[in-house]
Image (cartoon, rainbow, N blue to C red; front, top):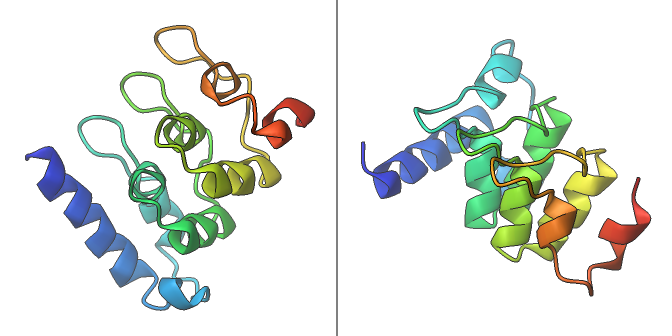
Length: 127
C-alpha cells in the first residue's frame, strides 16, 4: 500500500474510532485499546500517523485511550521522534506531559531529545 494511502487509512480509522476527536471528546469502545496500538507494515501506529499529520486532538484522544506512546516503527522511532522531526512542538509537549519516554533511541542511536531544537525547553526540563 502506498504511504499516502496508508496515512489516509489511519486518519479514517481514527475518525471511525473517535468520531468527535476534532471536538476534543470521544467515547471509549471495547476495542479501542487494541486499535489504538495497531501497526502497519512499517510499524507505524495511529499515533505515529496522527503526529505526522499534526492532528493534536487525535493525539490527545489516543494518549487518553492508552495508546502506547513509546511504540517504535521499523526504524525505531516513537511518536515523540515524529513530533520532533515534523516540527510539531505542541504535540511533542503533549506527549512529554503524558510521560512519553525521552530516552528511547531510534535505529540511528538518536533520542527525540537529541533531534529537537534547543528552543524546546520542555524537552530539556523533562526527565
